[in-house]
Amino acid sequence: MIIDLKGKKALVTGASRGIGKMCAIALARAGADVTVGYHRKEQEAADTVRQVAECGQEATAFSADVADAAQVENLVQHHQEVHGRLDILVNNAGVAGEGLIGSLSDSDWDHVQSVNLRGAFVCTRSVLPLMMPQGTGKIINIASVVAMTSASGQAGYAASKGGLVAFTRAGAVELAAKGIQVNAILPGLISTDMSAKAQRRYRDRMLARIPAGRFGKAEEVAQMVVYLASSAADYITGQSIVIDGGLSVA
Ligand code: NAP
Image 1 (cartoon, rainbow, N blue to C red):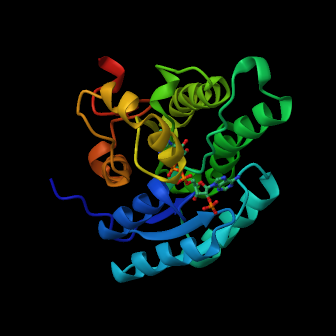
Image 2: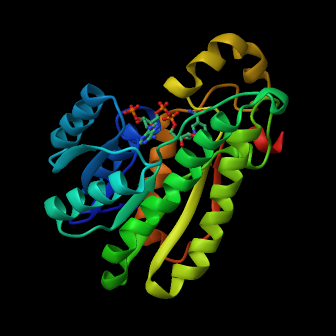
């Protein structure tokens, strides 16, 4: 199957690093122009823009905290001014936020929910005025396998990702008649900055839980994003697609 995203315009949040960066590059390889959303890492975002341009596609970077609705409005307005339309939204920006329930502060809890869950809601709400008149659109939420199988110290993060899975289903039902598909990807342990510390500390214990015997690569998540963003996936909506080397079924 050859996936062609020529003429498509994508917005990827958290595209300065890790999974989001690979999503932006993979979408560009398939022919899409990309807005690279990021929070603070300007140099890394500029590098993503450079790599998208090397694929022959247009890209600009724009800083916005996804937890801040006004900043997200500016991000979407920037995208519209540059690209004129929006076909693909990848809600990827996220933070880890570990802590045992007994010692997790209100502010730590709220921060994880506001970036991982409210951020996806706010971004989705902001792009609907662009997608709905078109009668087409793809929204892809990067959740986590911890929405299904959690671990100690991940209550806040797991709750945010479980909420994102529920939000995906609700959004799919609400937006299907408008020609907009909403799906979630649930990665397992993927090698990025976010998982680096845990991988260093618990490498052997973590690997022992993964039937594939290795951590996943950001590219492996990005390939699924490209598929879900394409017309080949027009009849797929509300789904949670797990990419975890078998972790959740072992
Ligand atoms: P990462 O390497 O830590 O990158 C996080 C990205 O999110 C960065 O681009 C960062 O921007 C951006 N970001 C963080 N807070 C933000 C905010 N408030 N507003 C806007 N952008 C913000 O993480 P990753 O591993 O690629 O994770 C990407 C997504 O996959 C996350 O939603 C994560 O929960 C999910 N996930 C990851 C794994 C894994 O094992 N890595 C597993 C399951 C799910 P700056 O660079 O500007 O700071």
